[in-house]
Amino acid sequence: MNLKKVELEITSDCNAACPGCARTLNKDLLTIQSFTFEDIKRIFPPDDYTGVEFKFCGVLGDPALHIECVDMVDYLSSMGGYCELSTNGGIQKAEWWSRLGKIAAERPGLVFIHFCVDGHEETNHIYRVNTKFNIVSRNMQAFSLYAPAGSASWIYIIFDHNEHELEKAKIHAESLGFTFATRTGMRNSYHDWIAKISKKDKEIKKVVVEEKKITTTGAKEHSKKKDVKDLDKFIAEYKLRKKTKNFETKKQEILKTVVCKYIHEGEIFIASNLTLWPCCFLWDSAFKNKEGILDKLNQFEPNWNSLKHHSKEEILQHPWYAKLLAASWEPGHELHLTRCIRTCAKNKAYHNEINYVDNAISTL
Image (cartoon, rainbow, N blue to C red; front, side):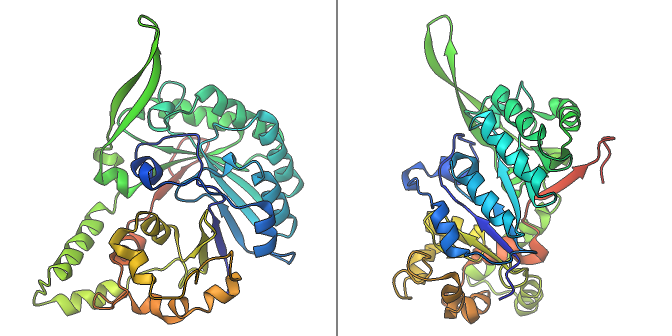
């Protein structure tokens, strides 16, 4: 495999409690797990990683919670690897972020941070529950003091409650030398969320929990929502065995549009428990055991995709990666997972939309 991109969920720990996050919605399933800097060096021994993108993100955690995250970035970027980190920015001391900024300055173009900040001082904490904007702002400033301009972006999910702070955030991003972008997620266009925000009531001198409904409406919704609804309809058809007259034709048309992160784009995902997956979506399914994915894959030998027991090269030679994954997109296959069609058919219609804005505040 020509490995082009590796997503690293170095921890399932997080300081926030975003209401739409898998860890918030499935607290009973969550076990805090992390892998170490030694694990990184073992899985990715010294080599030339020029052209390989290492994305520190994940499904369950924020990489900045991991105290060794900067060491990992330093190590991989020292060998030419491009390191991209997505974070809410509300954790660690300013010095930690300054060190990351210095590495970005030492290796121009190899370190990039996405600060996922959904609002400004009034509203960011409403979705990014438990984060404090003054700490986020301090950490962004600490990084920007050392990193070259253009080494970070401010990614802003527009909800109904934070739309009025959009311009203020754009101006703030420009002052830091960050690019600015808005993000639209399909989940937010399908669901409303309830944020549970703790705050101290001065009158009764106790901490109370305020609930706030999080909505995404109108032009803020994902532009491909209709495409995903069409896929949902198609999936419902074959689940209920309602094969319409044009079912086979429609199926072939849809299967041709699947763009797999692993097969077509050379990407792998390493979860916080050191299992290796083709993408974040299937790790999300495994975390929840959605569609009985673990039961289906349990036909394989124990620990077949564990990096505690095998090298990444050995895992990628496994029959599931070599041929069964692509074959399983066929609805009748015993290993079929509807997640592959719903998230990656119609040329990845489900995926997040990132719309970058230049410093003149115009859409690119």
